[in-house]
Length: 246
Image (cartoon, rainbow, N blue to C red; front, side, top):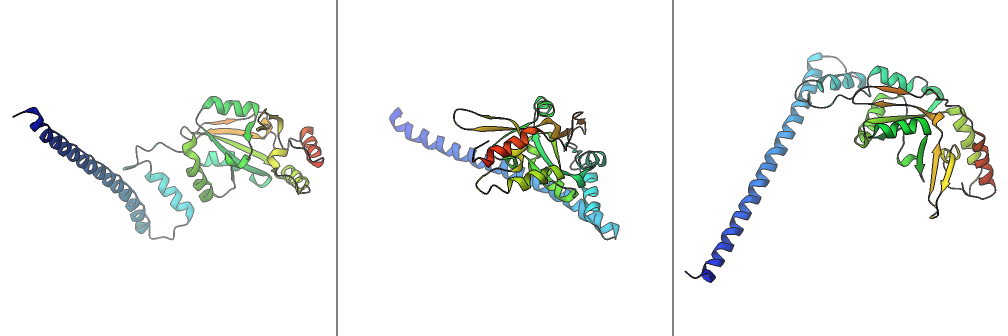
């Protein structure tokens, strides 16, 4: 049979095997999803069974402890340990929460965390774009931690004295024409490049330290001083008072 007559048959057979391959891949993917859902269902059923067997009224603390315990067993034993809700980590973060405004920032590099510890936290435009405010509520904290933990295992703890923060917030609120946050005013070494993009440096004195949530290791900042009041902060306010940008 001439090749020109066989060619259409070969093309049809090739398309046939291509579609079969696609179907096989879809089946494999569906099976994979079913296995993942099955693992999640087993995990959830473990939680509900434990609650049912206990015969007591559960509050949010009990549920968090149970989830932490189950994550260290089947089927979640392959999940990396997360120490952020451990008591000693919580104590480090919130030991003075009544007198501090607290924020967390995540990074995946230890060198970056060390640089922030020694040189301060650098941000562009909005401070709250990369820093999350937190307060002493374990459920709320766990929710925010899980939202951001994929950004990196090193968690920078930023703490600013509430009295200091309130003082500069009140001063800033007097300027209705400016579009800055209190964190902008509490910055030193403000840098603006030729394209008018600004970098703001929150001083290292406001860095409480950082936590490796996978290992539970805490690195404290020996220069931490949440009430640090640099004269530059007043100069920043003076600039705003004269309708100038920072």
